[in-house]
Length: 343
Image (tube, rainbow, N blue to C red; front, side):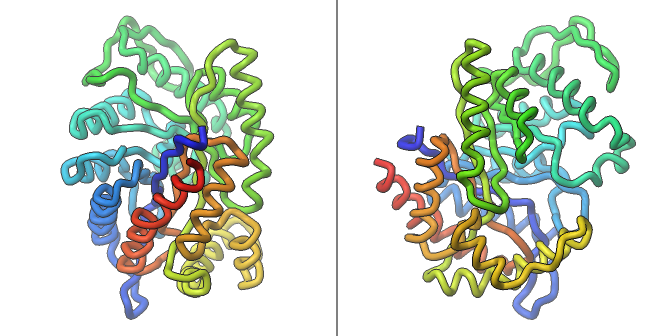
């Protein structure tokens, strides 16, 4: 798999800042994100994924609308979510929206379904956290049924039943490509295998090699279910600059702001510079010069035997111009280097 690695980008639409340190309006962040995706397309990057969040520090709450805007200005790059929080949405509407993006982009849409690492969408849309597992399990079951594009008969406890119901628009060129996003739950790995869906691992913090048991579990589960092994992908934060020291110096203040804000909500201690540098050197922050980042990606691809690597490029309120420069270096230098290393 690694020799045919796809290389993409992810973003949560982090609210970025101006040169004077003030934060941009969320509307401007969204417009900038579309420009960033257009640049990625021009550079030949394989995929762009946009997250779904419902909080002040991330600008994207409707990924499909942003992807539709990107579709209208790009030609080749594949377009997906990172992730769609299926538990607090309706599977029929999610399918319809992504089928629409697929039509607008002439077959380039994908969806990564997950439960999300934040819970703001549950009270926002009237769901109870106590139903966290049941909501995702039932709604995923319905979504998989919709992928067949036949008349669907389905019944559960989380939404109204369907009886011999067709859902439109139909996907023009075969099934909508659908991944399951997993943050480290063995049950989620086995669930993805049970439905025969590709697995996208969120590697945030620590040594990426620690996810090898999840890759092996996925392979064993697929084997026991007597079905072919779907693709496996990973995503992790990253930032590319001309040198290692420049990349670390530019990213650290913004990454720390983002990390400390989320950490305060979850009871984590503030991040120190030593912890940040350790994560860069020995963990899963893909931060550095093009050569350093390419080497880390290639090593991860070989260690986990993955089919796609997506770098989360907006970890914190970095200025838009620095994000554009990072994307430029990633597409023009990192991607060719990784392909050479894996050839």
